[in-house]
Length: 268
Image 1: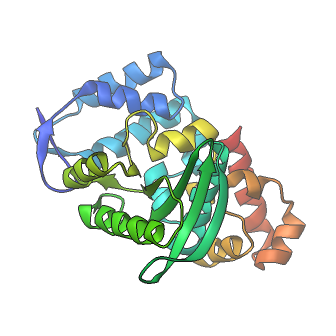
Image 2: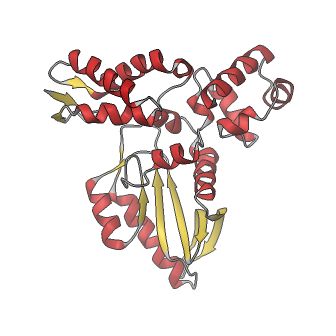
């Protein structure tokens, strides 16, 4: 039995992937295997992977009722504004990983000035960080982004900066050429499900730094107002009361109360 990926290509169905997805979403091992069995019985040739994901969410709600309030994590990250929200989100993730982070710097290279998203330092490493955001969760980050990062790194260091390497963090998968080039040139590339030991979603899950966009029902105006006030994470949102949020966002208190209830239920 084959499944159809978002790019139109087909690949054999792997039951273990459903189990892993359920486990990442905090289902028990028994629940994950039961859900995988249920989905396997509903398969048909060429079923879209998006349909499978919808079925996973549907079944997971039986085991984790709080999921009715949230959307898929990859889609949630895509809903962040590229600037400044996604960049700030990446900065917070890097800080949680033990890096000292400086955001949004303009540095002189040998040839030109460069506006860089972040500098991340830990131990003997100093990384120039490029945060690449995509609105479409099923698009790919191509080799061009890595080529540009490499060229920027060279010009920065030729201009007497002392970066150890470049880091590119993106919210989508990387193309095979991008992965190969990153490995060849020593670029720290982090994307969706890459690298296997510490991909973007694993960084998020490990540190429990979930974006506010994970909550269903947030409109673009409210998201913008939250972002403008530096509220990017659900844990940041949960620290506010309705009265203060109302003052910051001008949203109705009844709507904000419901959103806070959803955030607290997901976080719990």
